[in-house]
Amino acid sequence: MTLHDIILIAVMVLVSALVQRWAGPKGATPDEARLARLERKVDMLLTQLRRGGDGDASLPSAPMDEVRALVRQGRTIEAIKVYRELTGEGLKECKDAVEALEITERIR
Image (tube, rainbow, N blue to C red; front, side, top):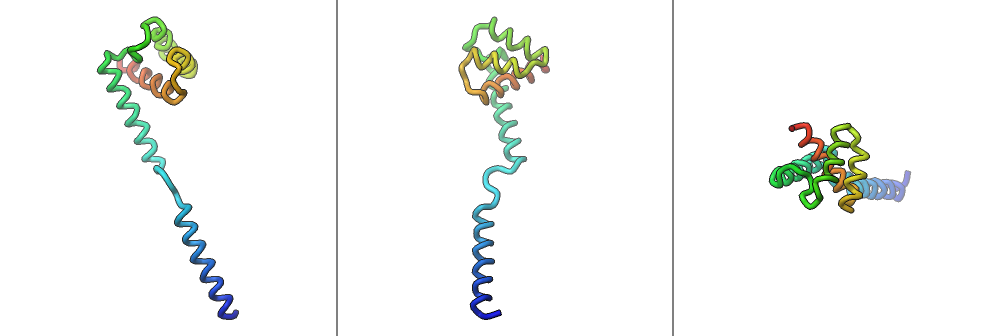
């Protein structure tokens, strides 16, 4: 093994270590992501409780009654679809709203 080979191996090891460090885990750990989701749900629940717990206060009561009925029946996906049709919000926002509604329905 020549000096050139040793230097080449050392450079490769150094570059490999730098790439691994640079491309390592980014963003939140699974626990941090879960905590962030839970915090968003708690915030949504607090907002609903301040409004009186009726879900989206901008919606008439009858459509929300349909969403609540679906939640009580355990038909969460259908409740999300109906809520999304009513509000026009994104899937994530509707899912969070229906999950918050599930929690408030369990409390009642």
